[in-house]
Structure formats: C-alpha cells, structure tokens
Image (cartoon, rainbow, N blue to C red; front, side):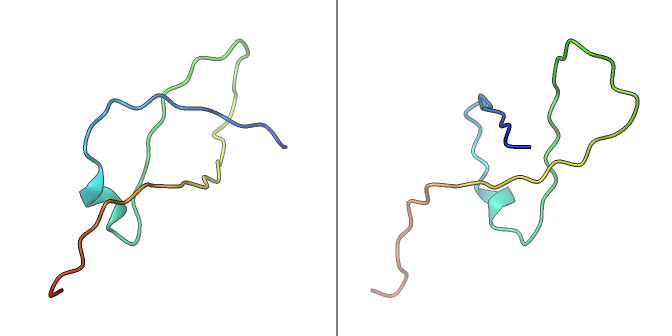
Length: 56
C-alpha cells in the first residue's frame, strides 16, 4: 500500500461523467510482471469545477 499512479489525461471534457453519482473508469497499464488476477483499485479524485450560480 501507499503506492500511487499519476495519469495523463486526453483533455476531453468529462463534465457529464463527474455530475453522475457513479461512473466507471477504465485504465490501460503496462507492467513488468505478469498479473494472474483482476485487481480492485480505490480512487480518490479531485476535480476543479468552474461554475456559475443560477438565478443570481
């Protein structure tokens, strides 16, 4: 534990995804060892949101 991944994004607008209660994220990786089973990864994300308050 205590390891982390830093991901480079494509620059696509993901607003419609992060507005949902849940979404799935697929990550392709390259490793130097064989993996014989699936791995569960917990993700903690921080998003910058530029928003306007409606009605003000």
